[in-house]
Length: 291
Length: 85
Image (cartoon, rainbow over all chains, first blue to last red; front, top):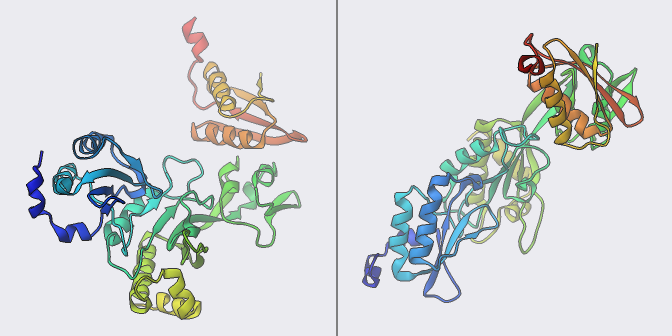
């Protein structure tokens, strides 16, 4: 156990870089861990428990964004706690005006509604962007289907996997199960076969999934990208800025969004407000331009 | 002879569990007709049967809200019942 006089060895730079949060009583701190997508291997849990018991009050809490925090750590034990966590490859979660830990739904291969491996994409995004300094906090999430469990429409940047259905008429047996399954009433029967009506389809792929003869195919699939959303003090929903992108294209979109945010954003101005101030057209021109 | 399984009134996951148990008693190539009165369960049972390698021979609505799946068991193995006897 580290002795209280170790406070002279506290690395202030790393404290500022995030993960260590001052509590109401300023002698106590909470340590935030980065659990990308809310997933952690079970063999790391004992170390979290050990740090909480040794340096905190044996308390561990879940954050609203799929993370874990260990509260009640005294200032002089921060360095020792941090080292102990680092030994178990437990990374600290970014706080403040930075690119925050990336959240995600369970995705493939766990969830039966999933259309994508949202956890894998979240890890890709996290390893590239998490902790970057930005004008204000910036939250990214990945959902594997339009049920949007990880709330992509309420994030600074949100990815939501979708698939556009197309019917192979010759393979359809006309059972009409898809009409009953579709929750958007986006299908109607014509000559005994289902057809999409209007623009009601939200690309959830329930029709593709339920079809007993596999007559429904995915014409296009990938992530739809939503930008500028947030909850908190002044909630607003993100706007769709790209259709059916793959992971690599998605990474480029994030990169361009962050370039835009850094170039146009004022200190403590959220991404969505910068988009509104600059204008959606201006923003889209910037993001879609090669750079 | 086509075997029958009436799962009306049953919900997921019992619909599939009962289907799976029934399929285990059957020989490869034998057909099972399943009755269900829940759309979601119909989709789930059909999807699960397909993913276990069985054939969906037919799937149709036979009256309002009632679905009938006809599935053919994959393979040619002897049913468990006969093996056990």
